[in-house]
Length: 249
Ligand code: NAP
Image: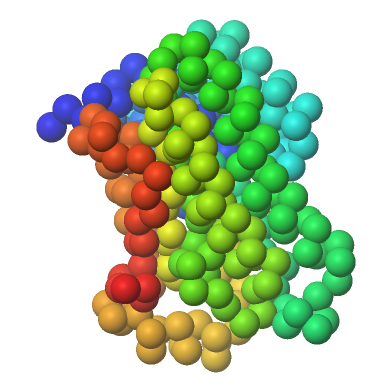
């Protein structure tokens, strides 16, 4: 099936590893040319090289801190020089600094909001300038189920992801007249480095509230991103799709 992805220029933030890498691979498999951005430049370059040779597409890497607007502007300029357009932006970069609110340091609140929420604002603002001129584009924001239902020990993270959902809807309303779609995905518990470090009692507790009785895989989040970026979703905007084995319903 032709999803209409071939030849598109796609940026995936924080895609040197984890869910971001899986999303980049999924889009590359459908023929998109990729932009891998990450704070870890070395790993981003290695990922871009592997994707280019595995899927026969172009893939470039940029050192990028999404929380900084100057770093983000430099990436967008680099992408325009390389590909001359931005068709797809996936705001994936994100971090956690978990602890109960009573113990949460101000700097951990600030850092998580700055990367997870301000980062989405920075990248979206810089990319829509080019998408609006082209009168087309797809933006997918990676939120989280905890942005919908909250989670003890994640005040900073859940607030940032709830903010991403609200930002998704607002951006969708602002750019719809220019034929740009903006949607969010709310993953549940996905097997990546981010969840690997959680204590066993926490991961076991999660399992009891997942109707599927298993954690998700990065590839299953990437499938949903592919849908949103494809021509199958051309009339869908401002939505939030949980990819969570039924955790939120
Ligand atoms: P991950 O394995 O920790 O990967 C995150 C990537 O983002 C890393 O490559 C990291 O670089 C990069 N990054 C961190 N800060 C950045 C910044 N300021 N600018 C650019 N890149 C940055 O995480 P993941 O599990 O794949 O998560 C990806 C997204 O899914 C996040 O937004 C996360 O909140 C969301 N999510 C994950 C789950 C889950 O269960 N895993 C559930 C719901 C939502 P370094 O390698 O240098 O740290």
